[in-house]
Length: 229
Length: 227
Image (cartoon, rainbow over all chains, first blue to last red; front, side, top):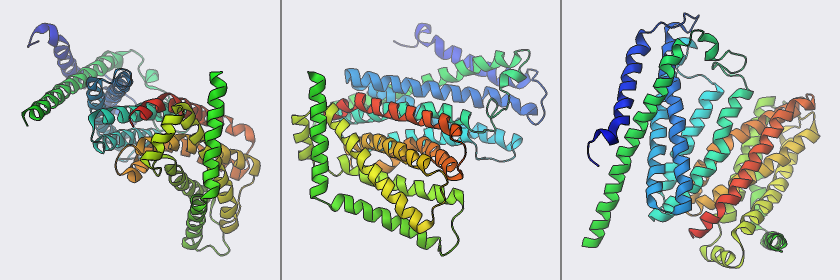
């Protein structure tokens, strides 16, 4: 424990990567493209944040499964906190995407299957928190919300990836639009994009672990209170 | 031996559900009334005398009514049953056969309500469907999909307080992709396009249903334990 380099190296790497993305994301040469122009730099924020969001949600589902297997409350706390981070990243993704849409498609919000799909994902996870708050007993809360977490993930999330590919979308890589790999001839974008994904993910994991530690402490404090009274 | 046991148990439970439904007619008749009055509401509010609705409105209104019917009729399967009765089922049957029997019964109920609803709907709001067999097939797939998803949601919601609201907020986001596919297929059926155009959507829909059923079967025993 403690603030040793051994435990915290990944946090430092995360912060360094985000600084790298913030700086190089703005100064590297990007392909000059019609309509997109300089907004292509949003790739490092918008798309990378979506990737990080899905990683958070996948971690949440994995811990929900682990909770059902072990019924140790530790996993339930991890699952719910990673879901919270997923929602935070989802909102950030919507905010950055909205700015991007304003300057490329001409509106803050357009009726696009991918936008709708991510809204569905956010609704699912918000419902997950409503479900959690409506159950008192912590073990029951853990079990039922884990079941919902897994069920929702299995039933809806794969579709969110499949459905936009079936219908027309304004997004690159859908409905006959070329994907970003087609624009990125010299792979310069990749040099910032992949670090961006890793950086945002590490930041999300860091924030989630902080919240998990707070939760664990408050659970312990509650136990002490119960013993006192 | 064990498999035949499971089938027997499930069959007995389904038979029990049907018998209860037939004896206490208020549930089915309540749903029929719900269906008829919401369709009539659509008829009145669109003030349809001679002109019929355009295709998207007709289609979407139909499926939204069906969605609400599905939430209300499947909510009954767990939300409206008393705690003691559920405890009794759990002590005599395996969780697998309970969830299977509930899904099968809800499928039958939804199938009936949807076909009945389609008849009433087309009487009042006009029948604009060109390819009726495809539309009916889509109805069947929709009934199965709705009942599979909502049965599980109902069992989740029944464990929490304010389960009526939870039923909607937990279920609607999950059902949206399925609903979109159903509406798309039924649009093809209404326009009477070549059937090969809907194969992609149909297989996708079946895949979702299979996922929903298998996750229900895997996850339900955990919910059962929490009672």
